[in-house]
Image 1 (cartoon, rainbow, N blue to C red):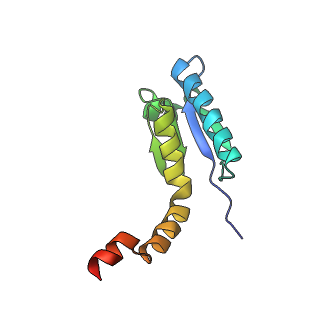
Image 2 (image 1 turned 90 degrees about the vertical axis):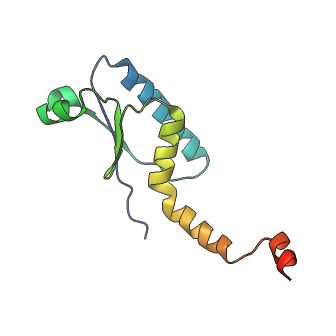
Image 3 (image 1 turned 30 degrees about the vertical axis):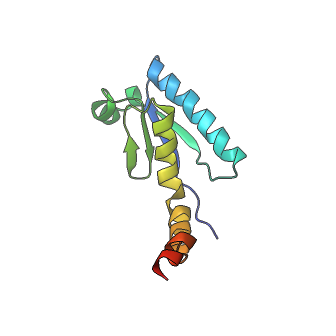
Length: 114
C-alpha cells in the first residue's frame, strides 16, 4: 500500500500579491500533474499573521511552499514550483527509472567497446 502524501503547505498572508501568484501557479501545476496521473498533495494554506512564530520565520520570504522538511522560499516562479514538487514527490519513481536504465548500455557504447 502506498503511504499517503504529505500536505503541501503554502505560507502567506492576506493581501500578498506574490502569495496570490503562487496559489495560481500551484493550481495550474497540480492540474497538470492530475492530467498526467502523477501524485498530487493536498494544499493547506497557513496565514503567517495568525501565528507569531510563523510571522517571525517567514515575514520576509513569503510565499513559502513546504512539503515535509523541504521548503521553497519566495515561491513565485512556476518553473521553480514545478521542479520543487517533482523533486519532492517523484524522486522514488525517478530513482527506479535510473536503476533500470543503468543495466542497459546504449547500443552505440556497446558497439564501440566490442
